[in-house]
Image (cartoon, rainbow, N blue to C red):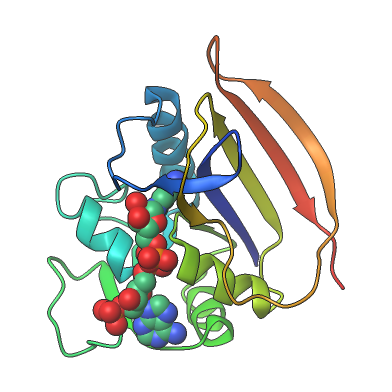
Length: 172
Ligand SMILES: NC(=O)c1ccc[n+]([C@@H]2O[C@H](COP(=O)([O-])OP(=O)(O)OC[C@H]3O[C@@H](n4cnc5c(N)ncnc54)[C@H](OP(=O)(O)O)[C@@H]3O)[C@@H](O)[C@H]2O)c1
């Protein structure tokens, strides 16, 4: 099964600003993320990201599977397609494979992406580079070890100012 990350970044590589307000994200970022989630039908995110976008902006409303990492697994999700879990990345991958999914998309945030990177389970990354520079904010990765090499698969211009960089992650 292929796991991809889809993430918007500032031109200096941060995924949120110090205000923690998402007014820097282009409509094309949202449209692209929504389209890929619709295609894969399996989405992974952390509880902080879920709390920001649920219920109105969840990319899969009541279809497919939305996996949300949380320590609070007794909490009840809004609908049965949402699974709150404290499983490890490899267990999440296995569970999605067991359900027949061949691709899944991680949409954030840093903590969630970092754990899948550390587990060696990210195959591809889509960076949507927005035309802003942040003085401070969240990096893409935290508490990961080592370096990873990437192969550039595609560069797409999404609007006058936003580009999408699609990379394959080389296995160590
Ligand atoms: N630029 C973009 O495209 C983009 C996309 C998404 C998010 N973001 C930004 O990213 C930020 C959120 O990222 P984040 O790193 O703070 O949070 P996150 O990855 O979205 O969620 C972290 C939370 O997930 C749960 N979690 C993570 N690992 C776990 C594990 N192994 N077991 C159990 N639960 C686990 C914990 O929730 P509990 O506390 O419930 O246990 C933890 O507090 C926000 O500022 C958001 O705006 C940016």
